[in-house]
Image (cartoon, rainbow, N blue to C red; front, side, top):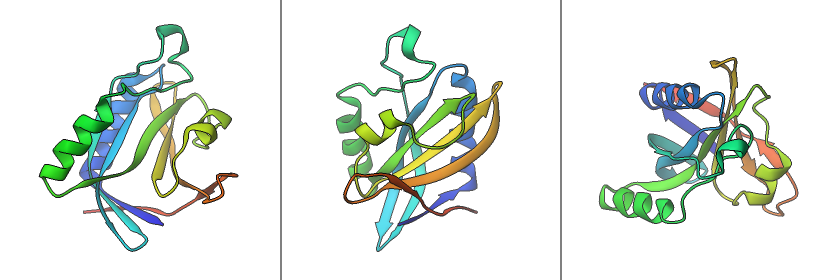
Length: 142
């Protein structure tokens, strides 16, 4: 799977994650799937549900958040195509926690935020056997 994202949506995502610093921020990626291409058209920023003292290295979603976002996306002809979250002061690569909680067939955009500013962005997909993530292409489009 490869992923494209509009430049406007990418900028919104980065701003959300920089604003969440020094904690992890994140949310859902909304768009369309055609073959092996996920096209991200919108984000659905989430509130981090982990206890305050854990938010610097964990991101959690409210149990009803997924359903609410999915219903809204369906009504507009979109679907959830993945997740995004930040790694404050750490590289944009999946952690063991990410591996244990990831879903197959979803894009995972991870943004490294260093000292409150964007450092780098990488995109991942969980292998079908759930053994590891593999990096996939992320393309910003107009």
